[in-house]
Length: 263
Ligand SMILES: [Ca+2]
Ligand SMILES: [Ca+2]
Image (cartoon, rainbow, N blue to C red; front, side):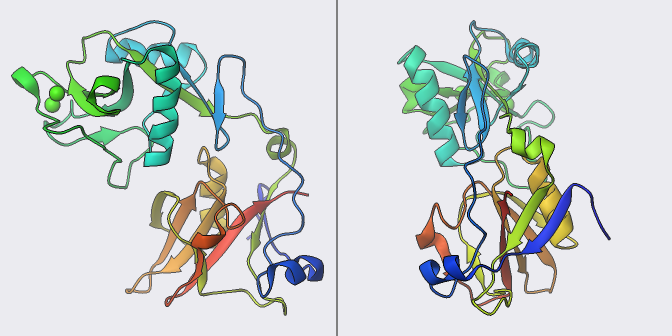
């Protein structure tokens, strides 16, 4: 089936293969020129900012939308560190709301954008404690070693907002995904990028996984690996094999790596 948004191509380029040994990933990629509005900071093709003033958790969600984004929740330690640095620049003893709550079911935390996976939660010691049975919203707290605490949703804190960066290439051209191949153009089916996962789920194949990557803020590449039960798992990644060569490794199971290539 042909999808106009997504063209899967196999990249074969002897010059790159010569540089990369047996691996041949993508044709030379012109730098993607993405940008964020003023007051927003870019990290992994996502724009972030802290709300200018404190709000209750619900109002902070609305405020992020008014600013053109959504209240964000970190999906990895690296992303949380970026948010911490952003908050710390404004106030060393910051509190910032993130989009995680256990309002629906006490003790069951859910984070926006992390449906279908175990949410990323990095609690401070002895947290979450649901103090006085009234703490259902999560924030990152400078005083708690930049870790998370649950607090009363009605307290006013600033919040982390995020939205996808504007990347002209992506909007004017279909995204292309290059599967990794050896020097003979054969697809590498046991080499993948480890770590850097944003989320993973069962997929139908390359086109479905690539479409999910195109829609996921910050997704740069993906693996398709086969589970022991023979199911195909799509793993969306916020990095690429060239950015973290050490984590681009042979696997002892079926695994195909693919990344966005432009041009
Ligand atoms: Ca709670
Ligand atoms: Ca608490």
